Length: 239
Image 1: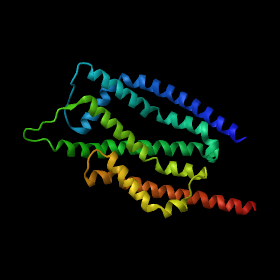
Image 2: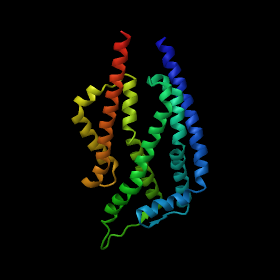
Image 3: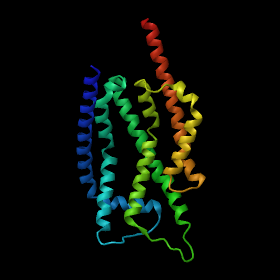
Image 4: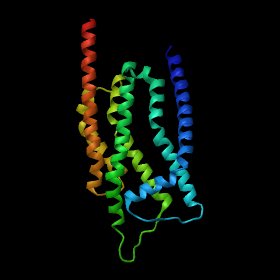
């Protein structure tokens, strides 16, 4: 029986991956037609000039940006597909499905917007600030676009921490008590991850990710405690 369940999950996962890729490709094709405008938006928020160092670089950059944009704009559909495929394994009641999807989308785009308006301008300003004297910045458009897109995605995914913790709790893989006891290790992990993800080594930009991530970690623990108390009351009433 356990083997059948595993095969069922693997089949569902494969189906989800295929559907998610189809949605992302279709979204990416649509995004390609305005990918240059997206690069322009990134340049405006960064306030710098970039250059192309080879003839096909601008075209290839628009393709890469279209791939990132395709995944970015397709995310609501991908989250819905994931919920539809795996909600049975999470233990979350279908009645809360749309609420779960809504907050997952809000958190991802909230993190992405925070990165776009706050983190990228300050981080790029810090890095470009090393220019001076004989040192002149000549930034490749391809590296600039991929750097910005990767940062935006990293912040969006990081902001999903409460949703991930809630799902793990409902699946019985993690308990709020264990996370509370190991809080100091979580702080260390968040600090190290923030130092690796943020574009600059200074404390200010690192804290722009670390502080929201830790707050969301605590929010996730609070949600887990609420769910655990409700489940305990249900078990007590059933007994």
